[in-house]
Length: 410
Image (cartoon, rainbow, N blue to C red):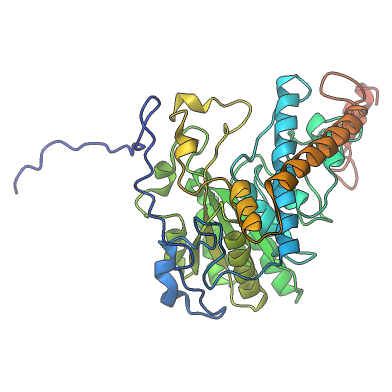
């Protein structure tokens, strides 16, 4: 046998490094409205190609076109625009608060607002999301109080989680927002298990799992797909592909699959890709997948093609691993600008009304921030009681914890 030579270890490389010219020529973007909308009960084998395309509704002129359009009224779209604007303003204020030392940590949603805000409007009361740290739009779009969110970020005396969770790791059963886990990918198997339990108990509620592109490399992601496929769990499996994990580009986690949606094909799960910066497309695809789960047709995997404009977190410097101007070159644009332009095109919005709404939302967010800071921040004001760290874990506190609590004098 001929000598093949020395083996070479392969490490995937991003298209461009810092200092280079951003290049998204490898992102194939179909024409808006060109991807068909299959029937809810379609056989997954008949839509395998949808794991490699991108569902889009809004075209370059701001028009809603194609079979996925027409599900939302103008009033619903105006509400969605306000939700995204609120999330962006909330982010900016909390990022500033972190820089001022009022909280230890923060993570923005900049450029990804449509994904969680639109998805929430496709669910029903009682459905449960198992989110990561970048789906606060699920709470904003469901009317969760901003003051309560800020109290949790500040870990102050009014923090509903009593300082037990890292800032931005919210929890609200009432709003269908399961407690965030700092160990990424665990929420995927939790969502599938919750959905299976809902089916076992003959309930009507479905679950939604959330994960980023980087965390799909975790074994929990694959385990969740096995169980979801085998037991036809009523769950929507969401993958937010924002192109970058904390410092590695999507190709590291994606491997040779081509797309993240394609991962579902090997499990017999219908898989779709959607323009994550298109509010209308996100809502339409989420509605389709949720209906499929509710009809006992099993899980759907959705890949949201979007872009993380900001840093991974307040502890990250993206200039170390990607070009500074890369976000400006992202071909799918800004989700807020795109929905704004669509509403202007429909003559129900204007630049003047948008500017007024921005001012009103900023005023509302600042007022909420002032109220939250009256309860304390990281280094000032009221804090949860030390006693709280011993509560809420055991129905009957073990003797060793009782002793520790006594030693702490609480």
